[in-house]
Image 1 (cartoon, rainbow, N blue to C red):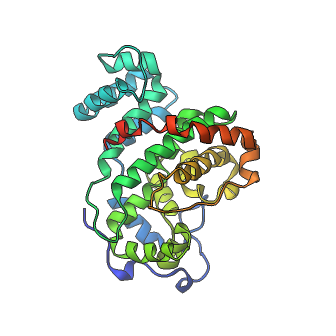
Image 2: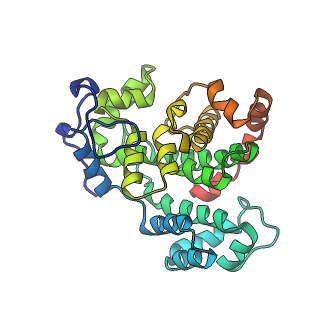
Image 3: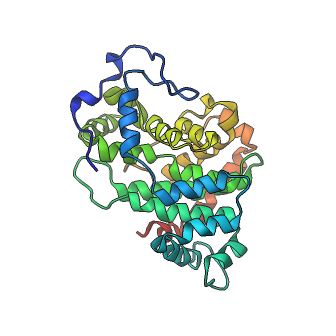
Length: 311
């Protein structure tokens, strides 16, 4: 895919003035002059076809497990890899399964859906690591770690579906991948600012006038992803600003992102994130003790992530 590397495609935040009306509404405002770039990015950046179909099936109230299996089985490499993952230590089944129908019976439709998405989305994360750019392997490891931790956090709360939390965690930083691939010329400038102590989203806005969360959310919105998922991607760094409908999911992803990064599995080496404020933890029903218990479970929780990432 061609990259959008022309320096005229992006502009510093202070060069644009305040946000103006945009066709993209309902999430964090983007400047109208930036939307053409976002539209161009959304044309270049997309999830694999099978991933989009799996999400569509999951959101269709009339679909069932057979519909999910029909989508997955049409992609032989994904189906084969999915069986390997299901029979791995990550899923912890006592007896191996021989087909996807058996996997659905034992793990449930939502769990198999998320594993299929993980296998298919993983193909986007190449293994080249040009100097001065983000490491896509590290970024993918971070994404799967956040997804896995988000499931654990949601299981401890009472207002968020754990498998929906996994999916949101998996895709929360997809905008970073798109920026790394298609706006690669600006990435070194962003990382230089990060090394001086500027937070990654702020460094991105200083250089490009938008951040990775906005890019990821816009692409997800154009792909007709569920509103809650778009919100969680867009607001995972500012969960207190999230609209009510997606607030619970956003809080879970934000906490999982902090925990995974604090544990040393961040998207950028050496990155630090501020601890979640009480306004995030309290609505989740997570007191300090529960938060500490989750932290203590992290080693076991992420121990088998390499099975999914192929690392």
